[in-house]
Image (cartoon, rainbow, N blue to C red; front, side):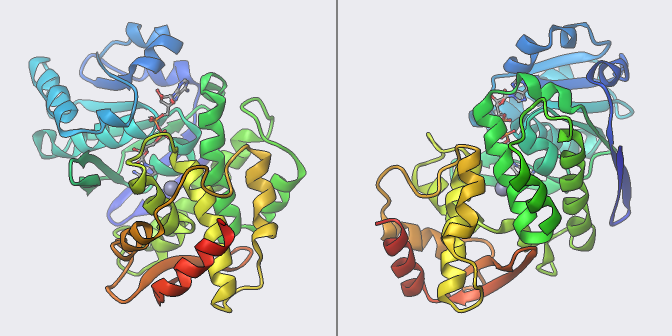
Length: 344
Ligand SMILES: NC(=O)c1ccc[n+]([C@@H]2O[C@H](COP(=O)([O-])OP(=O)(O)OC[C@H]3O[C@@H](n4cnc5c(N)ncnc54)[C@H](O)[C@@H]3O)[C@@H](O)[C@H]2O)c1
Ligand SMILES: [Zn+2]
């Protein structure tokens, strides 16, 4: 299985390859960046030909401090411009290693090997790399395409179930914004890490994301914004709890339900929250916040969302299953009223 991506002047492919075969591609010239959960689950990582850099698992590693430590280790090794940096891990490893690859020697060859469901269907394709700063998430970064993306869905068998469900929120999102056939497949069965059609579904999502980013790599036309369905509310919820005890997939599941209610209130869609909730419940994803939300603070966080042009709140709203559009200038009072109503 393979998806070809033409992104600006870059061309690369996202292909299915066995994990061991991927590791065999690493040469003595290369660097592999991974995290300690991956080295615990896959001891063969310690036998690769290149240099292995292991970072602590978790979002805290997407930091300036960790970036500096990794870069120091790279320059202490004999890494040259013609080497490749492999990112083997979830979105944290991919984002950090990609930013390292974009900046070391002003850019070296970079290969993504996503090992979480979220990284496979979302973060490893599209070329966004970066780290968090004290001022906020993903604030320092770049658009930097990989030379290749290799996916082995079999590694999802060691991914904690909670993180599998987290990735499923993005899979479900693709169905609502672009692909009604995918929604039908998802409605028929509950996917697990051992489902026979998992690889097919992962690559279906990869192809959908690639189509969007090929059209709008640097987010200029607004098309890429449709990938942000559920994310205006979701990102604000994540920021409010300071990214603690709420996974991204959980936040956007709550966000997608809320944004369906908002689209309905605006008269843009006939969809109701009941139409969208069951798929999230199938994967133990929340449909409303489980702890207290400060609505005034949430609204001000949404007004600061990067999609907003300064007039009201901007959201990528589903108009009907498979069709999504960026809507700007939404009245904050309406959003507040809807959220207060559905979360009461
Ligand atoms: N660049 C983008 O376009 C983009 C898009 C979406 C999200 N992101 C970023 O991705 C990050 C989240 O990614 P994530 O959800 O993959 O988190 P993550 O990288 O923290 O991985 C989740 C957990 O699963 C573990 N893990 C990963 N693969 C495993 C495997 N096969 N077996 C066992 N354990 C495994 C990790 O060690 C970690 O503990 C965030 O920082 C987010 O900002 C980036
Ligand atoms: Zn997301």
